[in-house]
Length: 362
Ligand code: SAM
Ligand code: FES
Image 1 (tube, rainbow, N blue to C red):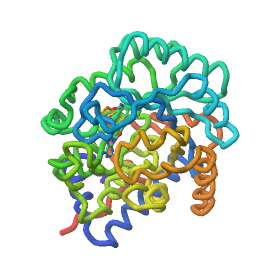
Image 2: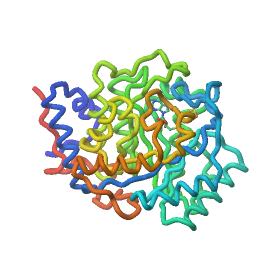
Image 3: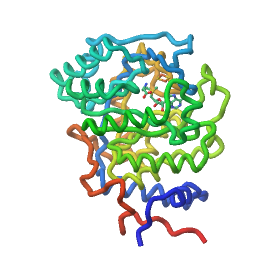
Image 4: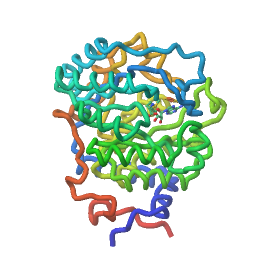
């Protein structure tokens, strides 16, 4: 009998302790990724185009109160120059990310930039700039926006409120509903090991991704930044960092046809290896950093962020080398959502034969 995805089941998987149990889950996640998403890895070049932020998220290195950050906003021409180079590196999507700094003029300017990228390059466009009204999201969609990334960060509303003085979980989830209803491919996700997070929270995070039936899911370790209020608080899984991969693998099992990136933060935790391991344990997307080299040090969300001293070209070449080592190919085409193509919906229980869970321990 296939088992439904529920709290108990996900918690049981998260409690896998031995190397053997964990490896079995990693292998299963890899097999599910191969079956539903194939061996191709889609490359989405990320441009961190501005670090201005009005918010004060307690964990974030570019929070408004961090006076040690040199603030910048790239010119549209510079962004377009970087975007135009992406196709030559096999990157078929540009991800524009920034702090959350809403303003009517800025939001209109962003819409114009999206329209120019769509008119002047073959790239799909993903935006990741935080909470906005439904009207602003609709305007960006009408400008040509394909996708949006907005993590819910944690499914625990109380913890969310503690970490985000400027936002509630309800407001964040409303944004995700708006994006989906507007037909924008929607990505969300969470951090792993936030202070105050329990195993139940982690299970809820995974289940919330499934409930939203997300097109893309981004997750990665919480990494304490010294210039933030959480700078002195260790990641909750500091003593067992493999838990981050377990969370990733189980997220893949629960969401067989979502695009899941091997996020940069995995490399910060496991230098030079983290993203490779993520690709072998459920991930199928890679986001090379395309931010101009001279700005990278100013977009330090957490310490030891990799590639800070590299150029966009070096990152683009490095990823191709990584994929070759893993025996994976570079995805062609835009790598749009595959959600629903395999008949999966939020209500689906585990698919017999494909996703049968390891037997419960006595
Ligand atoms: N402002 C946009 C937003 O909030 O969605 C996009 C930028 S925000 C900096 C991108 C992501 O960085 C957040 O969703 C968060 O999960 C991650 N992040 C920020 N600080 C982090 C930290 N100290 N450790 C790990 N991830 C962090
Ligand atoms: Fe604004 Fe992190 S607090 S992007």
